[in-house]
Each structure stands twice: as structure tokens, then as C-alpha cells.
Length: 167
Image (tube, rainbow, N blue to C red):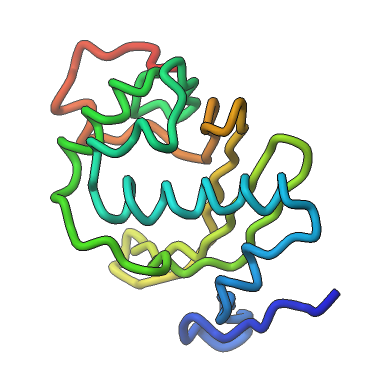
């Protein structure tokens, strides 16, 4: 197995290791197991089309109707995800690759994990880099469940202050 080529994603302060991202997404999508390759492609394309492209109307191509969401800012169900996408981003042209700084994609059994570099700003206004992940469970060729490390968003609570438990 060939290691995925990585490239630095950003400059960091002295003493820290710069985050790295995959330079070849096709290599991340490859798998000797056709089921795992299809699961990776499903998640990758959902990211490109629905999350990055904002095409909420195409969510049915990737997301199961009974989709379970473990992000506290979005309720479960495909219709809820579609509403979240429509309310949080405009439709854009669908790009051939994910534009977020993707580090790795792993698939095993019915699960696909994607790791990204995430850029944040601290309380002093200094930019720093951390990581983000999404974990998806596939069932019958569609994404049935999702996990990520999100915490409750102040912006989401302002738009829906009655929201209590969201997953």
C-alpha cells in the first residue's frame, strides 16, 4: 500500500507541527474492497454536492430518510438536514474535489471517517489550526448516521432559541 502524499496546510508558530493535507483525493477514495470504495465515494460526493455545493435538493441521493444526526445544531432526519443546508449556505457550483483541507479518509465495515484541518481564531485574534472529523454510517447505500465534534452554536441558538435537545 502506498502512503498518501501529504503537504503542509499552513504556517504555524515555532515549536508547533504544521497540519498536513492529502494532495491526491483519488488516492484517498481508492480501496481494494469495492463496498468500502463505494462508501467512501458516497460520503465524499455528499460533502461536495450537499455540504460544499449547498444543493439541499439532492440530499436524497446520499442521505437516508431516517438519518440520525449527532450534531447538536441539527435535528435528525433528511428533511431537517435539507432545511439546515438551505438556511446555512447558498447553492454554489459543484466542484470536482472537496475544498476543505482533507487529511485522511478511512473506511471499515459500514463506517467512513473523514479528517480535516480546521482553522480557528483564539480570544486574542490569533489564528490557529486544529482538526475536525466526520464519521458516517452507511446503510443500504445511503448515509444513515453522522457524528462530528460540534458543540452548540450560538448562531443556531439565536435562530431557534426553543431548541433543547437536538439529536
